[in-house]
Length: 258
Image (cartoon, rainbow, N blue to C red; front, side, top):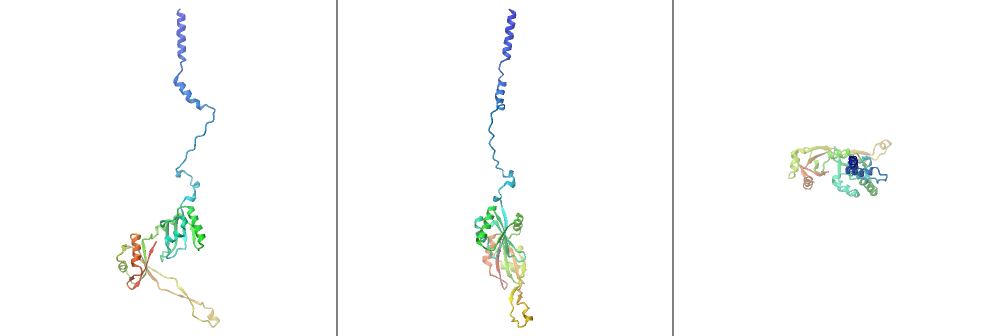
């Protein structure tokens, strides 16, 4: 009897040891997907919207800023004239800087910042359609930076034709009623190029015929001054009020430098 009782107890102990372990079953169910032989679809590619992580050599150069220099600017050329010429390039006045000669302040070129390479190509096509003798060439950004540092930005007025004996006080008196910076007055002299005039000789001998038939006629130097104004509006007001006015006994030509 005791033998049968011990057998029964041992059987119950063995059965209890084979009770399922819920934690182990859950772990096995979760890990079955790692051992499956079915082909899993690849995860969808993630979009990278950070432009800084894109290789610069792979970026579209057609959308990047393009700098150029436009040759053919004259004394009375306005920024609006350049904008109208390159009407398909979506330029603004802030995208154009007029470059002046340092010895006489006459404009000779313009630095242009195109919003894209495509806008630059459109400008080249506009020049081809216009059929004019202009030159538009690409430049590095440093050319634009240099032009920006030396730009008059429409706030500087050029006075041309000052008397040789005019002092800064005379210039200030001429600009009375205008808001300008007195300490910015800078005077200088421009020496015009000599004019070639036709000779009046009527050569009669072979020696006279070898002489040149033109001569250089020297012109008097022109005294000029640049004056800085606080705003573009004030500079334009000075042009309207003072152009063709008189300083001492000389008539003065006033021009705004852009």
